[in-house]
Each structure stands twice: as structure tokens, then as C-alpha cells.
Amino acid sequence: PEDADVPTPREEGATLHAALAVAFTAARALLRARPRCPADILAAGLAARHRPRERMLERLQDAGRQVVHELDRFLNTLGTIASIAPLLGLLGTVTGIIRSFTAINQGAIGDPRLLSGGISEALITTAAGLMVAVPALVAYRLLRGRVDALALELERETIAFIDWLETREATRR
Image (cartoon, rainbow, N blue to C red; front, top):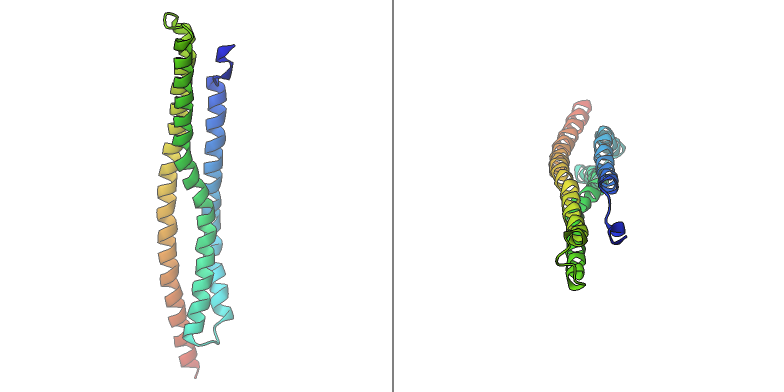
């Protein structure tokens, strides 16, 4: 009964699984968004092709910022999970230790069974927090790098597209 508040390994596993599912769903959404990114920017460029270079560049940059924002939207969720998971593990550690000290205060210093519930809670929550945070942080860093690389690639391609359009228009005249 005092151990009723301590999550079982199965409950901790379910919590870990749920947190990782959210992280991988965010990662999948980020990767799925990539194929339409250049198309959105290309469409903005084609729509602005008869405008002066500066105006066309503004439109393309705006479309690029919107694409990067969409990619970051899911990435921020993953970063939040990576940041909060260790704190939740620490919170469980603190409550587990408090529980052990409460048992000691109530005279359980000679009975390790009464102390083990709080110690178990502290260890399980610390491990669960780290098991969620480490993969989420690795995924966040990798995907952050991909988004940054994609943003640079989109900028290069935008300039190349504008140059191509200008060359094409100049040869038509």
C-alpha cells in the first residue's frame, strides 16, 4: 500500500513508450514535410516572375521562411521533450527520496522494505527521464542540422532560380 504510488516497470515502460512515440511522430512529420518545400517556394517564384528582382526575392524568401517555420514547428516539440524529460526524472527522484526520508522519520530505519519504495521510485524515474531525454536530444540535434542545411539549400536554390528566370527573360527580349 505505501508502494501503491510507485510506478511499476510496466507503467514506466508505457510512459517511456508514449513519450518516444510523440518524439518519433514529430520526426516523421518533419521528414514528410520536405518533399513539398521546394514546390511551395517554386510556386511563389513563378507567381512573382513578372515582378522586379527585389520583389520576387522578397516573395521567395517569405515562402522559404514559411517552409522553415513549418519544419521548426515539429522540431520544437521534440526539443521540448528532450528538455523536460530529465526534469521530470529529477522530480521523481526528489519525491522518491522524500518518501524514503519520511519512512525513516516514521521509524523505518531498521526495515529496508519500507525504505525501498522511495529509493525504487527515485531510480526508476531518473532512468525513465534519461531514457526519454537522450534519444530525443540526439534526434533533435540531427533533425535541427537537417533543417538548417535545408534552409541553406533553399536559399541557394532560390537565388539560382531567380538568376535562371532573369536569364530566360533576357534571352526572350
